[in-house]
Image (cartoon, rainbow, N blue to C red; front, top):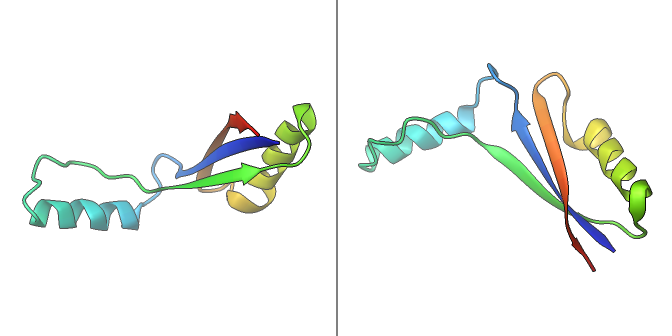
Length: 82
């Protein structure tokens, strides 16, 4: 069974309030050298079956549910075959 790691990130120029709040908090805690924090989501998908069909299914899952194409980029990779 193939296992995929899917990463969803904000596109360049999209405001990242979670990342910005984390950066500010880190600086308040004394980590002044932190200049940028970016928030992303990481999903792990185990898919029954395999081969090219699994790749196509992950692509469709990203496009239809996990990522909003107006504001998100996504990438995925096969990380394991159980």
